[in-house]
Length: 244
Image 1 (cartoon, rainbow, N blue to C red):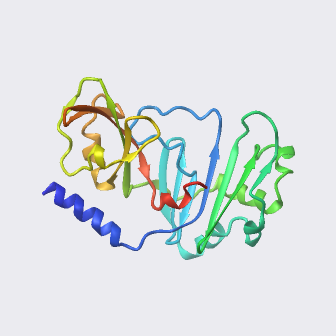
Image 2: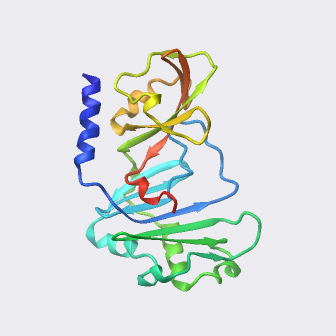
């Protein structure tokens, strides 16, 4: 019965009209703090902000993922960050040649066109900012400080797990029923590791596998032990910004 329920959830999402991102913003630092070990806190690869065509905005800051649905009147300014000039900007601007400056990325989509502009430098340093056109400065200021009084914890549609073969003793025996198995996962960067995706409805069930607040557990499956890590929430349409 559990397997049928999971299949139904995944099938319904496949036929639903998918959300499309309109604008996304990342900022990357050399000294990004390591994950705390709490489940779903591997947020460093997610955008700091991403806005979708239906008004959903997801904000990732300090290991927390929050969201809000904007009204029609609220969408226009955010969707148009950088104005019409954005699509004619260069691909990157260098505000400093210091080692490891913050790297800001803004991606906008218009139809089938995707445009990403990078800015290397600190937004609070005038000599760095001077290297960016005024329209880009305005966009970066708006996106880096964007807030909304109705932001609340994000209820994920999808969850990202990682499973890696290990020699550690298994803590659980038997793969959770209905979950995609390691042989069905997508190869991850590390050897003998795969990434797996679950529907957000499996969040509590996944966390119930853990002990002592860890973000991982070890599960025995078909004679092998797999270290399974609850990595992060997977945002809608993530494939849209691959290779940005």
